[in-house]
Length: 230
Image 1 (cartoon, one colour):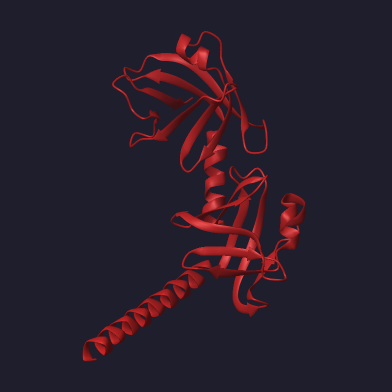
Image 2 (tube, one colour):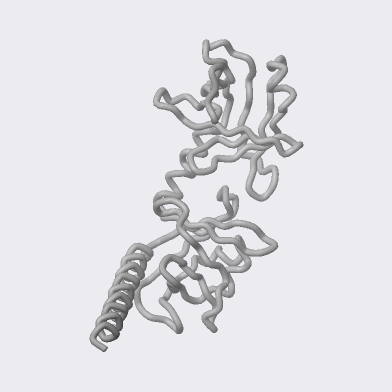
């Protein structure tokens, strides 16, 4: 009998500890979420400022959407509050408490949510998002593609002309290396610190900034391909 009581006590203590940890996790996440956030398509072609508040609303917490939200992202017209579900889901919800879109953190301060039939949306700290927008503006213009020995093999122009919902037009200059001409990228975007080039066939090349302010194609190779700002 004493063994049964001991086991029961241990289980109760474990459940209590789990409950406390859960409460601490959700409380911490709530504090982190209070403030201004940008809700956007993956590459910020459509954006909306969401101000999350800590005071209670029906079945969640209050929020405010800037007036332009409904035109930019029509589904936001149904959002009236926010809440935390489970340990790490940030929910933007309607008046009945049902999810309009659920977000989970994929990087520090960056959350992703999926709406079926529409695609992925990003929720991130407003200041960080605007900093990224400035970075994207700095990407626009002429670039040279070079090999590791510094030999130029192609010229490329990144534009801010929309190609589709999340991507922008890119153009190759004449006399490019055969491999790049065959790839023939037509669209680009800046995604999580990478320059993404895409061809009509769906092939994707990714470039990351290195310590020398150059953009190297990843994964790296013995004969790297580098993009240099002109």
